[in-house]
Length: 275
Image (cartoon, rainbow, N blue to C red):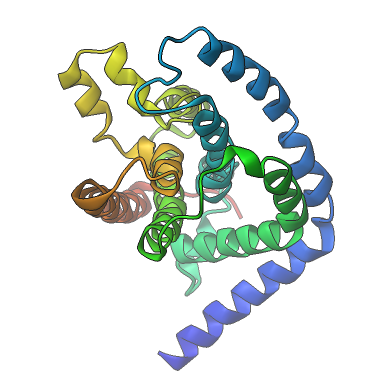
């Protein structure tokens, strides 16, 4: 157990050192990603100006702008660029063999690499995040209660795990299909709409039948952007909050099992040739 812990710590430390060397562009890159918020402020202000009563499904114009900013935080935790395609590429090009013959677990190695990536990202990008949220502070409600803040943190951590294992599961399909770019395109399309990145999923109750909107609220993608943001804004409270966290945890466990099953099944059918 001690030897394994030492191995994982060494991998994590090396991944951190690698990313600290070449990720100085995080500050500028993160700041540039916030530029569209200017357009969003004008857009949602105009939308709510035409709405009778001044809110939509319990959201004011300030709530929606704050929600949009919070989804950037949520997606910074849950997004896994290059993970699925990287796994499929290793299968296709034969690099996956090193994980089959060496005593290093593929999923554990990739998870540690992503943890290092996120740690470095937030350490370096904390300055632009703080600047933007300070400039837009008037759009946010008062700070939530401690229990609500803890639920928000828990949802972000589980959002990271869910995003990782969900994309890892897609990447493992490379053992069967070799190329998963088409699947990734479909996944990203659904992700954009059903994660809540485009608008709060509460709005669907005004456009879809209630039963279909409830089905959407059970799917895992909502936990990648919508759910953490709604928790911070107090849109999910009490028993609904507890049920939401339990459902998120259940989806995390499901995709942990799915990704590991797909990896082991893929190992059984993989064939490598050459020197």
